[in-house]
Amino acid sequence: VTLRAGRPQAHGQETLDRLAAAIRDPNFRIFAEGGVIHVVGAGIHEQSRDPFALFDRLA
Image (cartoon, rainbow, N blue to C red; front, side, top):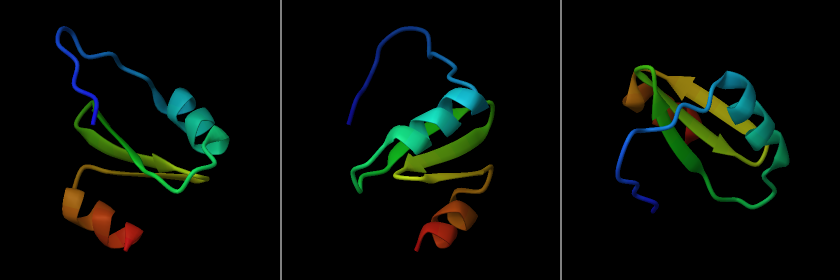
């Protein structure tokens, strides 16, 4: 878990897509920006405003 003090940094759709393509390990990275939750992992970039729907898709 990484916690950061200060102003949150926006990554954007393209950066998160590139990150998903580059990740090789089985761990997920979770980002929240613009009211949307992004789950990024090895070849996966799922996103939703509804966390329950998002995690149902990952199950």
